[in-house]
Image (cartoon, rainbow, N blue to C red):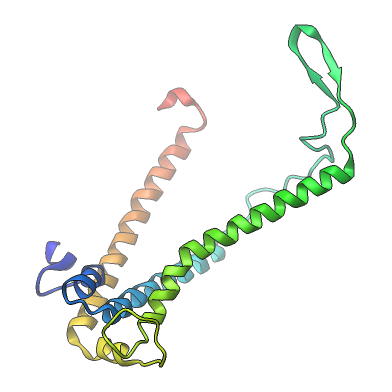
Length: 193
């Protein structure tokens, strides 16, 4: 209902974050609320992954490799012109190339993780500042967390967020499961859609 999503009386955490940071210019409280929301999401993800791991069962035996590599072709076909034999790949060159690709992948993955986690780390640090301004704290304080849990407004917003999230997850699972079962029943026939 609209009142659950954020009427003046009933607020959710997602509505309160911009209000605290932009309207009230209280960056520390906005960071505290945002970090509480991140913690709530992490708890939900942990519970969800635990449930999935519990119910996940292998459906078939693992496929074993035949020993031939996809990149280990010994000839190249040119249609009507025939085939031309390829020179053998040097194992040393292939190993060096594989190592470069592997390390490039790891560097790229590390940069992506940093890109996504850096704002969360800064938000978490700012939430421990004793003042109202946006700064990395020189001394850590739990002032904003105490304010958060002592305020009926914030606790109510937290519970409203949990209610909305719970019903959203239930609805999404029911609709998604129904769609997955429907598509599964259609099989792989492309014309059946």
